[in-house]
Image (tube, rainbow, N blue to C red; front, top):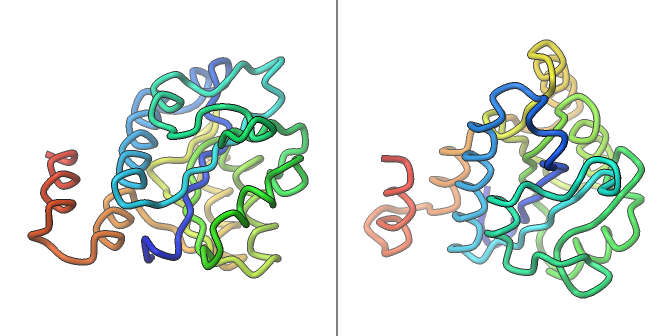
Length: 186
């Protein structure tokens, strides 16, 4: 993973959905950790919301960290969708292409076996290098998460952890960025 080639995609961590999923507080914390890393290292962050009218908007701790929290139609980084995959959502592809050379996508969010899975499969079909962060994705059941991760791996996605992402994005120790971000894991 390379911070200069990556985008961070946060899928559907919404008010009415995340409390029903496994380890909701830990998932929120891990997503926030990665957004802080992305913000510090200049990695673009894109957020999706599945049918926000029914499932609510993105969890506040996450939205508070997104540099452009508004709807993509108004120049923000939040893409509303009704399809399970983010790919067909209005403005999603355009948002992804705002940053040329970003061929790696680090994916976090929920649910692993539905929206995360379908988005990852379509990103892979489009030639993106996809990394799914195992400790920053979740489903309502552990079994659904496990099989969703296995299917993504079988399709060519790389399964990683939040610390793997941070350390690979940093590349070296001793920098101001390393000191700031490594403090987040202590």
